[in-house]
Image (tube, rainbow, N blue to C red; front, side):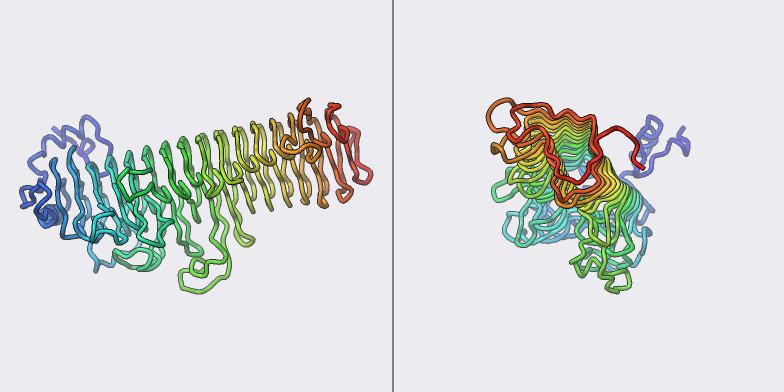
Length: 541
């Protein structure tokens, strides 16, 4: 006998007891053929499938089964309601045959606000073929569109060759999971070179979410994207997706929170694999990015966007807002393209990126002078334990950042500098290994209260002889503490001018216990033009 504990509801894991519960109730499932839908790909199956979905609605919930076969959908969108599980069995294909969204959770006229719309839904299995290169089907469309909902699971399915919009949109959704899905093939019908396969969005307006209102600016929370693949389909006339997971609209005072992107593969995407716009409490971990235009972008509300800088009442704030608590950890980035950096975090003067950890990532190769990791207007950050190799630009670039630590990173053959800190404050560059930098090993320009400690720099200035430095401090930098560092020239070929160079515009320099030895430096091991640097290990008072 089943017990309530053993029962299965949409979104619950399948245990032995719950499997038994399902087997006992096989007669309660709703097979679409019982409602007139027929496979074969020649007759519209959508009316029969909708009747089965309606039957589940009328019963207060149910399990709709789509057997193997090709199911032509010429009457769209399908509408799925609360407490429904829609299962496409192995070998089942939904073949779109109308220029419309495939499926929505509810009706166009509904007015459920917040997360009170049709919820507790599972959509699983099958090939969802959007046929975006087919005549009459090339206009922008969605595949799966969810809004004002909670407890949504989408899993084990493939969306193929979608034109213009998104494979899955979770809008105003709480507790959503997208698991083990494949997003292959995209068609840009024009001016849609930024679309995400999975869009996480808020109920901002009909232009943002066209399915239904109300437009109460409710955002998404507790979203999991795990084990998914994003890339190309190989269909003639299609590309890989521009973006994998992300957002491109915002409202001041609102955030998407507790988003986790875990163990996914992004291959050949044209722009950002993950574009985390106005997110908080977010993790990207264990993912692989291969041949993408850019990897992970963190972005506060864009100050110049006059729509996104409005508050829920429509009042123009003319300001951004800070976002916080982001972890980018344990990912692999390979063969990055020239669209943007593999990892980039960008704040605004009125909205910084706060509490950021970038740790344990492996980054190998970027193009078009892109840096490996770039932070701008980021506060309270850690960039640690990353391996950054063969980057076309600077390996780790900081600008207008404060209260951070860049430590224990291993950097190999960057095409520009190893690490740069421009107009940064209260930041430590500690125990990094920098090998064969084309330009400077470490460059500090302007800024104050920076610790440069225990770094090892080998063979800086490899691009041009007698031009660069092991460590360069310039442009009015102040209160710079340089201790325990070691630089070494290459020993042949192009060499740096100095192991350490400090210009006369810099003040309050303390340096001691460093090792600049190497007769091959073209201008000598050390050049310090600052006024009265502190060079002993005594206390400063």
